[in-house]
Length: 376
Image (cartoon, rainbow, N blue to C red; front, top):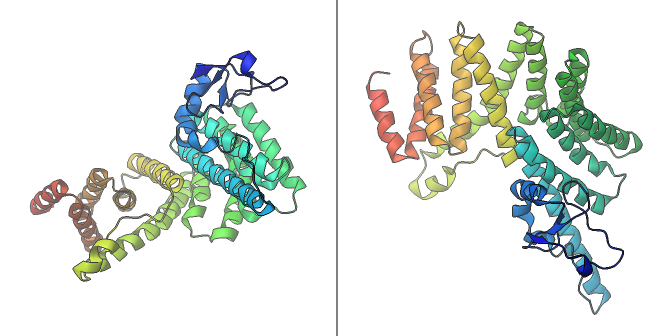
């Protein structure tokens, strides 16, 4: 990173920090179009998103070349617009992944980039700004900055109220974040109201049994858990587990069917894929790992619940190619299933899952064969 020399800055141009918009004193030495107030914000931005988009910013923040015809100018503007839209989605996905991983500080610079690109493309009053406001709000809640979160949520709500183009997906996101806010403030009645609305709007878009709706059920379960209404919380955690188990098991069954096909098409069909993008995978890991932890502490008298969540998390890690973790969880579920009566079908399903996991890694394959041969 290089210092800015005031005499090199055009008269009347004010350079602002990419993170906080304070007067800039330094510039990124790689792209030379991104400015910072100091080293701390440069490092924060680099760790969050700038490393991924550094070179992509150059054509967006430098003067467009001279074009000889109107057609060339139109093509240049279209290319610029597509680059901005690509960066909007890239920054948004990176920021969401950080949020689900609990990396709230890293999420903020990426979220701010997404917001600024949205303003450039859609204008200050567009409903397209709402997802970025809500992501900034969620990161602020995670950091414990409740007042800042309320400010972002107010901007999102005001934009939604003014818009005639707000769809159910946006309404779902808005109620999701309001539910998070009121949960953080321990106002559980209002939290339940907004999360119920989130479930309604998400169900309108995706269906009530879709994994993209499961996050709202999970947050609602957390509210009942905080209120010590364990029967209701337990039923909702079960619903979330069932939704993810059904979704992931379909991928596993497809792979088991593929194993019976000729070798020339076997390799392609055995490629691991969750069908999710990175933020969705991070959300799934967060949701299911939390439920597993809760089950292991509260459902010791109901081992069938522990077996199901263990298997579900194991399937997720297998499809994400986290094979050692998948094997550990599946083996634990298999041992539990063998200790229970009338669980032969579940034991068989877990044995098949262990076989799939072992097929991807020779070391795990040997360990799995030894494990199964010990009479487990």
